[in-house]
Amino acid sequence: MSPIDALVRSLPDGRVLTDPDVVGSYARDRTFVEPGKPLGAVLAATREDVVTTMRWASEHRVPVVPRGAGTGLAGGATAGDGSVILSLARMTAIRELSPADEIAVVEPGVITADLDRAAREHGLMYAPDPSSYEISTIGGNLATNAGGLRCVKYGVTRDSALGLEVVLADGRVLNTGRRTMKGVTGYDLTGLFVGSEGTLGVITSATVRLRRAPAAPPATFAAEFGSLRDAGAAVSAIVAAGCQPSLMELLDRATLEAIDDWRNIGLEPATKAMLIGQSDASDSQAAIERMERLCAENGASFVAVSSSPQETEELIGLRRMAYHAKERLGACLVEDVCVPRSALPGMIGAIEDVAARHDVRIATVAHAGDGNLHPVFIFEHGTAEPPAEVWAAADEVFTKALEFGGTLTGEHGVGLLKRRWLALESGPVAEEVQRGVKAVFDPLGILNPGKAI
Ligand SMILES: Cc1cc2nc3c(=O)[nH]c(=O)nc-3n(C[C@H](O)[C@H](O)[C@H](O)COP(=O)(O)OP(=O)(O)OC[C@H]3O[C@@H](n4cnc5c(N)ncnc54)[C@H](O)[C@@H]3O)c2cc1C
Image (cartoon, rainbow, N blue to C red; front, top):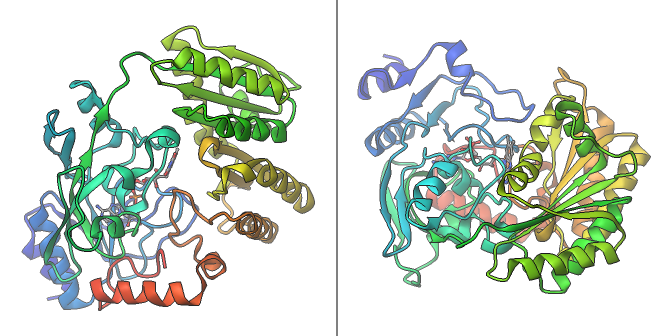
């Protein structure tokens, strides 16, 4: 019996897909990276399915590629030749939601926004909100340590992860962390698994922190600038002034044009950048007025405060549709550099300079309050690999981010796409230590090989 037949037999009916066309639809994420030819895909419905799959994979030395919703932007869920895809998307139970303890215990396939909506029924919220929060899973968010719009105030996914249940490479079940707000027993294994991109274990349950939802709707402003660098300077000024926004997003001209082309937002010719800011503090109106003033002092040509929840939704909607608008224009290499916030204007200038010198189309959005920029390199649809000038431009953007004291990836992870630059940031000692950690959890090297480190 072939190994894949043995897997089919050991799991309940319908759990394993082997038709190559169907399996292929589970083999890629949202990048242009072409997958190989996986043996099959397991649609796990229970922790036991995951345990069985990992025991089988260890016995037969088959690589396993864990997968949530496949919205990743780094090639992390791309399946290689001879691997088995392990989809957690069917494990969608919210097992517990405790208003008293302000926590939830969830399965990995829960869609992020669904957890947030469930928490809101109790006056709580699940804070991490990647732009993809209506389509990505908690498991994927944990595995990539996803960021999002509210991170500027509430932190990234790791800041909401209290404990995990993880199936290890050999099928053992490891429980990490706790359900308390504090705790220092042993090493921080929860922190280690968050952001490990499926290379150390498969997350089958998570205990996450919920927070009190703000009592009133947030106050929101939008500012337009005649120069992207001015917008970056306004963000630095807002951060330095201690305004503590709960959201601070920046869209450049190329991004606004892509959205305008799609949804006709009446973009003015002189607008080169838009900044959207929000405060959910109890004195939100005063905070917004300070931010408005700082925008005006830093060259904003127009600043307006949203007058209704519907207008606010529309503004935030613009930001959330940015990636989809760019995908219409071509294939996208989405980068994710993060720099110290004081370096934001300098990094923006560097990206503009790189785009001009390499004659490459770059459209940038930024979780600006975190210094996290997504320069999106757009190239022709149907091109298997980005052209040489795109790689050269990306190389310069990364180098510049590191020179500013930044990092290659703020929230998307390394996946396959950023491995070529890893050594620049990590250095040989950190790389060796990370390989050692990997060997402890996955001595056979079967968990998402070739990704993250
Ligand atoms: C339109 C759009 C907007 C986006 N905006 C943001 C944003 O604002 N912030 C942000 O951080 N990201 C953003 N992303 C990227 C993406 O949505 C996130 O990386 C998200 O966390 C991936 O979740 P997923 O369920 O799709 O995971 P997948 O893409 O399926 O997997 C991502 C990685 O996690 C691993 N993995 C998945 N589930 C598990 C599990 N249960 N156990 C172990 N490993 C697992 C996979 O092996 C892979 O390495 C965006 C993507 C799109 C398409």
